[in-house]
Length: 272
Image 1 (cartoon, helix red, strand yellow):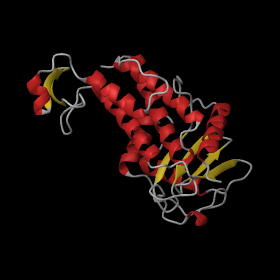
Image 2 (spheres, rainbow, N blue to C red):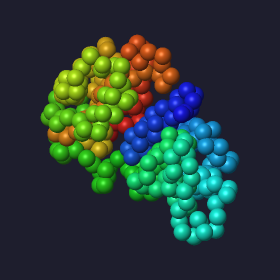
Image 3 (tube, one colour):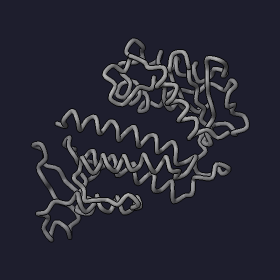
Image 4 (cartoon, helix red, strand yellow):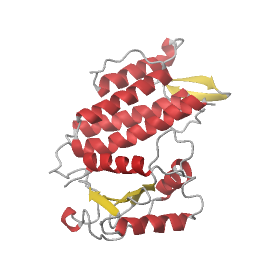
């Protein structure tokens, strides 16, 4: 099992990956984006014991370094040639790829560094792909526009078409895994309807908001600290109360922190 410290680091890496995934498609590799990428690197190096990575290294170089670090020292020539090898991890016989050092798709995965490393490498690879596509130009929506309506029909601060709801996977991730304490008193349907209503609200003194280049909108209740994002006519992306990563009680909402979180996301994500 992972230590409490490692679990906290994993949670932080997930949050950083999500923030990078939101920032880079709309704003490109800004100094802020690179700063939080370096934090992701530092955390992954701490967890995986990777070789040193230069601060100016490309994401491709980072991935390459991690691939080399993932392979066991006792890998035989036959295992290298056949493309896979077996190792016992936490009592499970796991099949690994001898190219990446990661569990082969479809194999049972023991909870450990390999699972964490795969998560981080996938996040970095996704960001590398987005960077290669040149997604920093907000005037071009090709390849990343996801709404059911043209951008001009989506209001940054006015009322919008209702969202359809969460996908089943997204519902489980946000309600059960990331924010279970915050919505423990709501059923799945109540949580979904609650998020829909917040996203349909018109901005005013108590409701702040913006729209993103991919056609999603954000609404934030400055009185409660609740933040939601979704696609009008499409799926809801998230709904939660922003709290510090290591908050002891995620139901104890710090309005100042939540407002700063909203303003930082708006600065990085807004289209107009």
